[in-house]
Length: 414
Image (cartoon, rainbow, N blue to C red; front, side):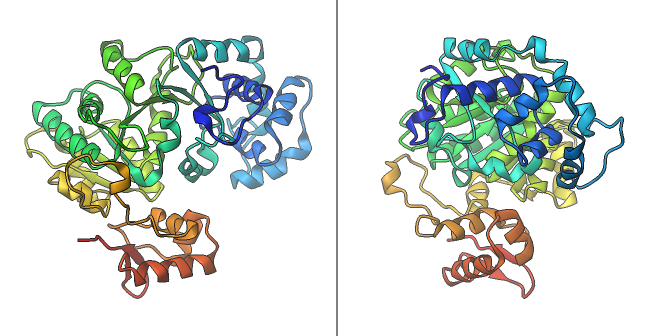
């Protein structure tokens, strides 16, 4: 399947090959999580942004004020968020960019490029606001799985790379139980907890759900399976699940890219589980993004003598994460108490199946653990305030939401 002229996963929207090349070109010029670029794309098309970058002797001073307005502050002239500094940064990469080569490299490994106009684009990534990705490179033996994943069906499991036997066992039990219940397990493909989570999802052989059993979010290019020691596992994920990255093929993994990648893991999923983490683990960065996005976060406790559980205990003590003592606790946080077997997806109705679009968006925004003001629910979901109120009242009538008189949160179903 070539990414340059075929719609990913067979959706109804088919961007032109030229549009896909423009995204690939910009992706090679602009590092992910660049707020200035996203601000500009709220003012112009991708083609216009590319033309602006290519005019190396031109600085559009009239754009500075609206860009600063979208950013919400006025950066100094030497700030990375200053428009002129950003344009200079991107223009330095022009001689190095080869969009056709990147698209061909993805096609050679059986992958492609997913852009926001594709039917399979994960809409929940819009919650990242100015930090949302420009595009996503993918690899999968079954591209149809790209269309099947959705926020309510995704659960992220992350943690220490130097996992203990306890951490591996807990993670595998969690991941397998969630996968048996039809949830897609999202992680980063690293050693330790990530690998255990992916293996657990892949252990469910009779997968009959529309989404993939597991998604790996890479920090480097999709043609560079990293870490190399997990190449066999990553190839299994490509064969049965989905591997994605927001950086172009050929890109090497680097510390800042791992940190950038973590926000995608958090944004893709309804629930983020930290099954084992040291006091300064990178998994805590993922948890932080999840909290900011209003996602539910849970952490598995361990021995008070185990350094690998110190980060989990910290999250629980701070109130940032619910205490997760069993896979059933995870299903409870998701509002699902499913049987631990894998019948067809048609036989597994979801609580949200009979909700309208607005009601579903409000439901996905709300939390089981933390009460939220109606204004906050409206802002996070993007649903107008009056429609948010109607949606909340509908959820309450279905015993899916409750209020303390000021804030609202979801109610677990027995």
